Amino acid sequence: MLILAAALSFIMGITLGLLGGGGSILTVPILTEVIGLPGKEAIATSLLVVGATAAISTFPHARAGNVDWSTGLVFAVFAMAGSYVGGRLAVFISATILLILFALLMVVTAAAMLRKKADPPGSEPTERKMSVPKVAIEGLVVGAVTGLVGAGGGFLVVPALVVFGGVPMRRAVGTSLLVIALKSFTGYFGHAAHTTIDWELTGLVTAAAVVGTFVGVALVRRLDPNVLRRAFAYFVLVMGVLFMAKQVSVLVSGDAHPEEAAEHARLAPYAPLDASKR
Image 1 (tube, rainbow, N blue to C red):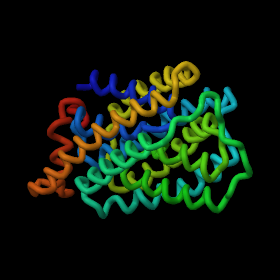
Image 2 (image 1 turned 135 degrees about the vertical axis):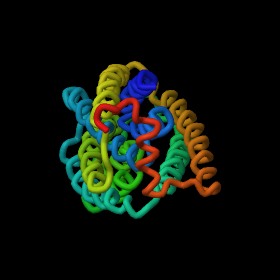
Image 3 (image 1 turned 90 degrees about the vertical axis):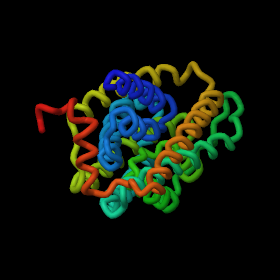
Image 4 (image 1 turned 180 degrees about the vertical axis):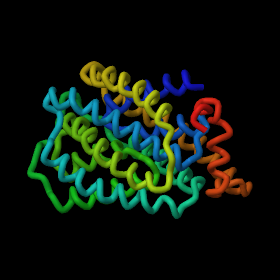
């Protein structure tokens, strides 16, 4: 299972480095369905993995001039505030409900990606002056989503930067990674007060994802982003529907994860990986 999780994390890293988003959409299902972590632990771990991966992959984008530091930092400051609040509020919501919200976010995001018209070859939006109030509001909303359901939010950050920040698409991808890194770490600190983390597992998944990001960054100039975006959208849509169906069935059957059962669920499927520490 660890080998499969590492391979899927590598793919997640490619997606994150290539599109500037999509990391948590893949990371949370990897941690819950492949590793067997409970929902809240998976969400907190996802925030760390995606945050570290995005931080490292920001550097090659920055060297290529694809990071708008001023707009990104303003967006990130407000997103970090929203992310911390979302992480703190997560303790009041059951793990099953959080995962249903996450699956719903996957479906909505995929639908939005499929509805987006293809960009003409070589086209870029005209760069304009940053609208601080709009960027701040969008940052708060996206940050709250990040902290609450463990979504890095790149699929929300990129269009927000383009529409409200006036950032050209290529620079929005690199800037998104900066924002994702900062607010993912802040969201994790919101979860840290009520969630435990397996650092060995987190390090393994992060290492695989980081290697994938460098591959993704290298592919940015070689692949048609419109074709890639649609293929990824269909993949996310299928995963979201399946993930949603499973979580709804758990909720309907009455087997939702109460807090007292979460620890048992964490120890059972994952104990062999961390037996020396228990």
